[in-house]
Image (cartoon, rainbow, N blue to C red; front, side):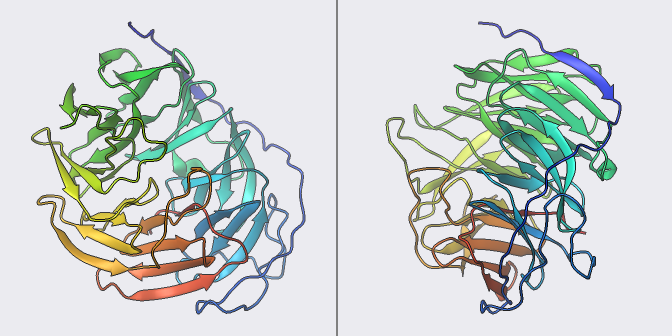
Amino acid sequence: MKYAKGRLHRAKAAVGVLLAASVTLTACGGDPSGSAAEKPAKSSGTSGPSGTSAKPVEDPVVVTYDGGLYVLDGRTLKVAEDIPLKGFNRVNPAGDDRHVMVSTATGFRVMDAAGRRLTDVEFKGPKPGHVVHHAGRTVLFSDGTGEVTVFDPKDLGDTRPKTETYDSAAPHHGVAIRLANGELVTTLGTEEERVGITVLDADREEITRSEKCPGVHGEATAKGEAVVIGCEDGVLVYKDGAIKKVDSPTAYGRIGNQAGSDESPVVLGDYKKDKDAELERPEQISLIDTRSGEMRLVDIGTSYTFRSLARGPHGEALVLGTDGKIHVIDPETGRTTKKISALGAWQEPLDWQQPRPALFVRENTAYVSDPSSKELVSIDIESGERLASVRLPQPPNEVSGVKGH
């Protein structure tokens, strides 16, 4: 079937600051060696940080836990703030060097991570999904409405930035990305079925589409601004005005999580081939060459999860395995160049919302969480040296942070 076109809403004006109720909190932080140290400043979570110092947090890292968020100094890993926030929350870079987007039950909230506080700015929408930053724009996708929201992260602050919105034809679990020339690549689907992507020009008229991508999920952008979208039987690659389907080598070969790099034309993807598994623990990753349209499968000898994929500063493919090591892979050859010990062996839980180790990479530093020990460590990717570590009061779940300076 053909999926209908969505609707565009141009440049919504900025609106006033939303009011939010404050809540109280007590928590303990830790020093880089993991021993208990000083208490982080108490926070209401919405206004400026209380306490005696408003000094910005250096290169902040944000960690979710059941019931709140930790804001850490990215260099020392000292806990700067413990912010209460009920529910299952997710975090993503907002696209600048100060803010993080927090996905809550009611929408996308803007966190001033450097200022160690949640702002009152919220992009409301049920089932907030993917957050994508590319070419100077950040794009939010609300699964509950199908609304796509685009803004310049430089405009983030204590008031809502100017936005452009686009309404998908139907709500679905989707994703969108805005390219440097103003084009919008966004998914097609309904709550029952997801089938592909459409590409819209700067005036949001359709350029091209493909409905040959069952179970469409996730995106990544490679060198040369080639966009890769995952399917249950391969990927779609959008480049230079055309969409190409790259088939999986197996009948069912689902790629639902990808990691791209501006330094490499090859996109790193996961790879699942057992359609009937309650929880497949894959040991192969996919490497999609956006130049040739070829896919290479690489057996890494250990399983991994959707929070295991990242890219290094030179385009290296990084995979955090359940063997506790970061596997550094040459994307051109598929060869593992080194393995960096990060934590002990672990197993993925059945429930995807339950904490499991996560990998977040910023420039030359990898941040790895370990819920079993309540630890977070930072590691230099080049040398493999452990830079800092902290033991947190609660098991960490998701890890993110601001973009590097």
